Amino acid sequence: MTVTPAKPTAPIELENQAPDRSALMQNLDQKAQKYHIVTFGCQMNKADSERMAGVLENIGYRATDDANDADLVLYNTCSIRDNAEQKVYSYLGRQAKRKHSNPGLTLVVAGCVAQQEGEALMRRVPELDLVMGPQHVNRLDDLLAQVYAGNQVVAIEEAFIEEDITKPRRSSTITAWVNVIYGCNESCTYCIVPSVRGQEQSRTPAAIRAEIEALAAQGYKEITLLGQNIDAYGRDLPPGGIGAGIGGKITLTDLLYYVHDVEGIERIRFATSHPRYFSSRLIHACAELPKLCEHFHIPFQSGDNELLKDMKRGYTHEKYRRIIDQIREIMPDAAISADAIVAFPGETEAQFENTLRLVEEISFDLVNTAAYSPRPGTPAAVWENQLSEEVKSDRLQRLNHLVNQQAAERSKRYLGRTEEILIEGINPKNPNQVMGRTRGNRITFLNEQKPELIGQVVTLQITEVRPFSLTGIRI
Ligand code: SAH
Ligand code: SF4
Ligand code: F3S
Image (cartoon, rainbow, N blue to C red; front, side, top):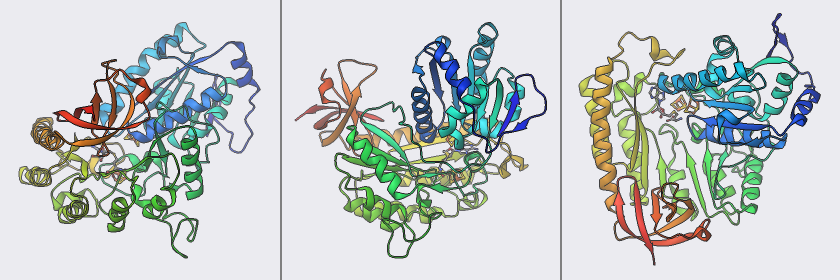
């Protein structure tokens, strides 16, 4: 970690020194401090924000919905594409300005842009107090102690992610994220994630199970196990641990068997799957374990083998199709979603059409699409065969059109059906409705003003279908 005193001399290394928390405590004692967190990016970031909110509440902060009313504003940032990154700078600019008239304001940038930019970010926005990478989430209190001792702090070195002893402040009381593996060891040529999230670190099965048991005791009903490449779970753990086959390493499938019987938890999901490592044992486990929801999120990125090779994805479109065929053979109605990138460097019209063909032939419930965005330090960013903005937006539109058509088509199969919905809350856009999701992850509304249903699994008959949501009545 680099700690720069407010009146900068040379940066000091404070590695291994116990932080002095008296300044932090003194600062917090002065008045009830309020925090505001803005989260960009993926489920990992959402989970991290909940943990950072937990740390802040643990040291006496309370939440406010209004950034302009907060004493501490934290942006948990995403750098997966350039537009995600730019959004942060515009938000940050406004708060940096506010700091000039409100010097007591503490400004923090966490997450993937923080990790990517490090000290450069501090130089670009000198009003910042703390720039911290995703591996430092659990240490937010110690880092703030350094800040309140009068330093500007940059914490981005590779770190062992300690087990979190603070309770996250979760945004839902029904569904919860549970990290199982941090980081990513793949080297997809377009992707910033490995450089901002670091090496894979699996949590132990015992720690994961303990967190799930604690969630069940608090009344949570659904958990989603998280990893950027969740199929890599366990490969960095020593062989022969709890849940592993004799002498072997534990895998995601073993973990699912190991945590499946936690009483009170009714649904289990996991994401994100990687076609390179996806196993048929996993499909069988999902079919066999009743709490495992019939939904698979397996990004394919491209339907063209040449491009998949350039992306270093490690599979062919044939292999991807075999995975989907196998899932559908065993669970014909499973929901399948994916991610895809269009206009990767060098993508020809014919190669793009291979992506369209794959989507056409598989028929997905949802595909998150994006035009390729060059990311700093990634191999593909410096290739000379970049495509124009026109090609990017044209291909994105054509793919989106197909994807939306398909989602509408796939939604139709729910009409008239009986579905189990776990009610998660009141529809924020219509207080007369409660809402939840099917096992296949489709948002479903129920026209009843009954908050007491929250947390219950209700059986609905689906009466209306839209591409990405359903409405039903109780039967
Ligand atoms: N770990 C997951 C996804 C991580 S990022 C996986 O391996 O699939 C989420 C999605 O963002 C990716 O699936 C990809 O479709 C998209 N993405 C990542 N880098 C991108 C880039 N440079 N430009 C455009 N989209 C990108
Ligand atoms: Fe990025 Fe590839 Fe890792 Fe997914 S598997 S996070 S796309 S490097
Ligand atoms: Fe974005 Fe970081 Fe997630 S780059 S997608 S927040 S891992």
